Image 1 (tube, rainbow, N blue to C red):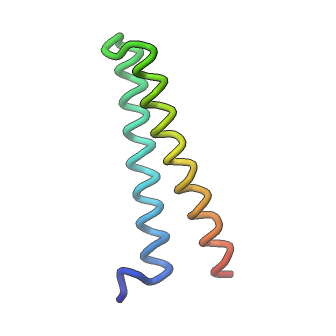
Image 2: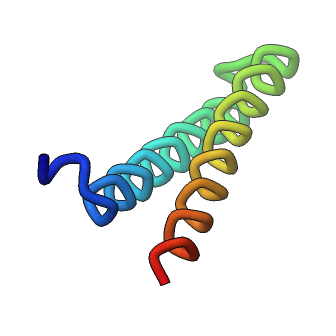
Image 3: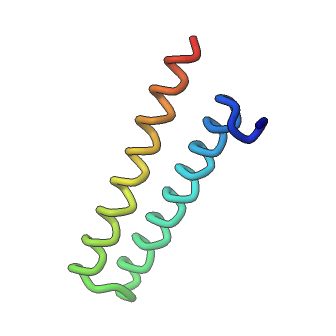
Length: 67
């Protein structure tokens, strides 16, 4: 049950946010190095950033509800 505690869930959200941030930065680097074309970059980057911001909002609301 500890893995479902509020603190554990917030930690998991934070690590997921970091992973998504890292993935989007790697994709950005590939685009700058011309390893990825523009349409592919935009599609994947948008998806990664949307997921990151969704996690960030969940994390923020979770922290606020624990106060």
